[in-house]
Structure formats: structure tokens, C-alpha cells
Image 1 (cartoon, rainbow, N blue to C red):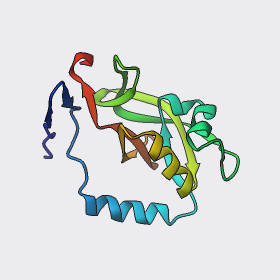
Image 2: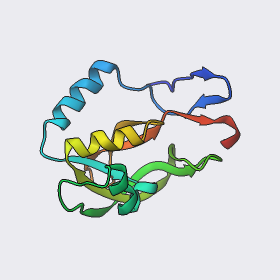
Image 3: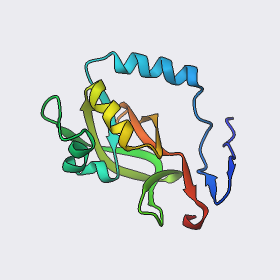
Amino acid sequence: MIQPISTKVAGFKEVNRPPWPTDEELEIANNSVMNSATVPLFCYGTFKNLKTLFDAMGGAAAGVIEREPATLDNYRHDVGTDGYSYLRKDPSESVPGYLVHLSPQEVQKTDRREQRYKREWVTLKDGTKAWAYMIKLVDVGEM
């Protein structure tokens, strides 16, 4: 069983989640996905709004962004006192959102905007694998 990591940073604590993938694992995943025509991304917070997603890409998209309803089981969507959304493991909850397919360049632009987050592979309710932005640290006051 993977044990959740505990990182101690003054005023912050790690969200209860498995350890981050190693840099090598991320590089392999990034290279395989970023070399594909489109990248699946699960949008659950502000990116559910297509204008916000479009703005995160610098106001330029390679094509029309289409979204389809999607659900991520075993997580809960929370919003911290700072207004940032994050996902927290919770086996009794599910998070509604949308699945979008972006170009690798568009994902790199959203990565620059989402610096408080790290992309992580998730499996959606229908079995689809997609990236989702998981927050790195949350303020203890939010818990």
C-alpha cells in the first residue's frame, strides 16, 4: 500500500494523497502524452468555464475546444480559503467536471498558469485516463 507523503512547510501541509511520481516517471508520461495529437484533461474547477481555460492558453487555441461531461470518483472538490480549488481523496464522493482534449502546446500553457498544481493521471468513472491538476500544498487553515 502506498503511504501518503507528509511534507512539512511552515503553515502548509500536504494534501492526503499518494507520493508524487518520480521525475523519471513524469518525464516518460509527459513525453508519451505530449507527443500525441491531443492531451486529455479533466477540468473540475475554474477550467470548467471554457473562457477561463481559453484565457489560460493565452487566448489562443489550436482549434475549437469541445468538452464532454465527466466524473472523477473517489475524490471531493474543495475550495481553500485562498479561493483555489483542489481535489481531496474521499471514497464516498465524486467530482463532476468536463473532459477536454488539448494540444500539447495548450497543455504547456495551462501548466504555466497552474503553478500551484501538478498534473496527475486519473481514471474517470467511465474508465478514461486523463490528466487532472492536483494542488501541491494547501493552507492548514483550510482543513
